[in-house]
Image (cartoon, rainbow, N blue to C red; front, side, top):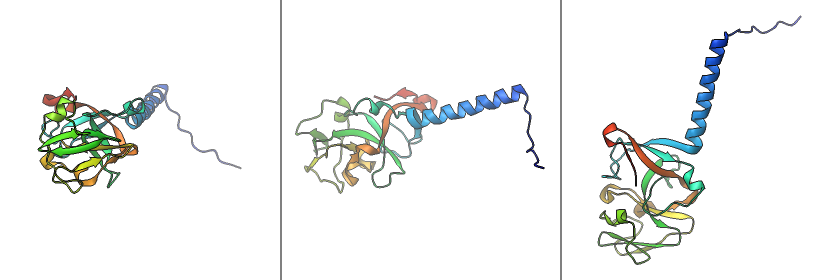
Length: 184
């Protein structure tokens, strides 16, 4: 004779609460995986735009519908260790030539139209191109720089961000409260 497994009978209220919790967890996983995710800024490489300890929200779906544009703050998987997320400003798009000359970025030999890229002084002391070197960005890749150029480990040191490593666009700072704002 076979024994039946013990069955726990739940009250309708407990069952309803458990179902609500499970649905909430499932929804949170879907949202964080595919739509929007929080990230914490670990270093000063994006000062003064982003400070150490700032927490930001990143749109993970936006770049499924449109290409990233120059000047946006992007989050991507670090090319030398794809398990680590990095955050930098997008400077060069695939097919463009990027040069840092006298502290200014030149795109295809011209200053960029984006005022944010003109607001920062960029050093070019990295291993990937020296002062005055012109770097050709491969198709389906990006050239990124930190706003705090002297303290940023970016494309000047390790090269380009391949398109498949892109995570998303930084949308806003949500913590700490006195720094809450939309990122442009």
